Length: 203
Image (cartoon, rainbow, N blue to C red):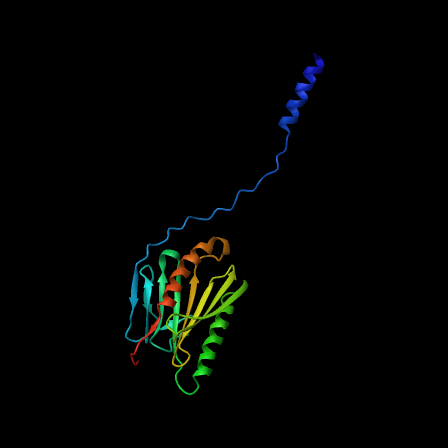
């Protein structure tokens, strides 16, 4: 009887002192309410191009952009207040005998500013392609890591016009939590790129 009592007491103590290995809970991120999409036509008198963009982006013409004074009336921002971000656009007239040099300057500037604003980048993927509109060539930069500006693009006809666009977010950069938001906005940036058309306006 004493032995039985001793065994029960020993088992009880062992059960009470059993150390369980703590299992960390998966990291949770705030739920994002994505805006509904309806598409609008971008058509400003001072721009020689048009495209389709979602109505959750709010157009604003800029006199300054990314700490630079606007060099052309067709510098503007599409604000994304619902997702705490924006897309900045700058237009450059590259026409003339030295159009190749001007286009190269736009590409170099876009790459340099991509790196400047993404010091913590883990990598960058560059893609080149033409849209269904054969006189539109595109370069895209996808920046990986905890960065504030994860996507940039240059749209050009290689002779007269070049447009540089850059996506920015103003929340603390976190690649894991921002990935679904970035993917959502990139869908519409690709819509903008593939609906891009040059107009016959002379500005």
